[in-house]
Structures are given as C-alpha cells and as structure tokens.
Length: 199
Image (cartoon, rainbow, N blue to C red):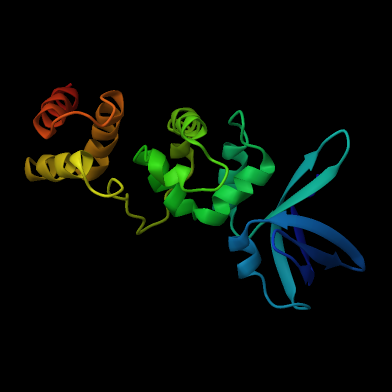
C-alpha cells in the first residue's frame, strides 16, 4: 500500500492532482483544503496517502496533514459516507472544525455540507461521537455555539454561570435539545441538563 508520495506537483484540478515521483505520475484525489496547501507546480510536495483498492480501481487519496487523513478514515467507516463525500466534508470543515462539530453534536453544521442530509448527519454524529476522541483536537480549537443561538446557546450560558465548563455541558445540552426536538422551554433544558450533569 502507498502511504506517502514525495514528488513534483503536476496538474491540479478541482478535486485531484498529479504527483510525479521519478517520472511516474500518480493521480491523487484530495480535498480543496489539501489542494490549496500544495506548492505551485512543478515544486516538490509531500502528500500523505490513503490507498483504496476496489475491484475496478486502485485509488489514492491525499492529505496535507495527518489529522485530515485520520478523519477521512473515520468518516468512511460511516454507512453512506464514501470517499468522495468524505473529501467533500473535509473540504468544507477543517479537522478542528469537524472535531468541534462532532463534540457539539452540531447537526446543522454538518447539513451545510453539500451531500449531507439530516439523516446522514445524525448517523455521522452518533457513530463518530465515541470514536472522535481518538483524534486530538488541535490547540486553540473552540467548540462552536449552537447555530443561530437559541435555547441551546442560552442554556450553555446559564450553565456556565453556575460553574459548569462548556466542554462538559455542551454534549449534555445538545443531547437534551435534540431529544426534545428543539421545542423545549429554556428552563426545561436547564433543569434536565442539571439532572444529567449531577449524575
């Protein structure tokens, strides 16, 4: 299996590039984030690679950093997330952003990615919540507030005022808000969150 390529950057397209290693051009599919990080052709680049062998193809997926490759591997373990969609998610969300979205159970953050509907977003969140901890969140990454504020953001502010850390409270509040289908009053969310956090 090919794990890394170091060679001259050749043709760069919207979702792939060619890396020339001693005269052999390897077609590497990559996120827009990785493609943007590559030096201008024909400079030398080092690309981390995930090799995927199928019955009808031998495909290479390239990454500028290990965290992006790790997230690609995790995303493609979710039913309904193929390599192409995984790259689309990684084009829209950096590894730090994706870690924050998973930690916050931010379904809206995932559904903003083209090709990810509400049902698939829920599956990604539920399947990766326990696995995402294996990938370190880069220093300085901040968990996002709930999209557009609302009950979840207000509940987090209230709990912070009561001395609960955001990283501790956010998953609990997000779970409760999701269970109540965003229809709960603020006091109900706070009361149930306190009950869960007290356990």
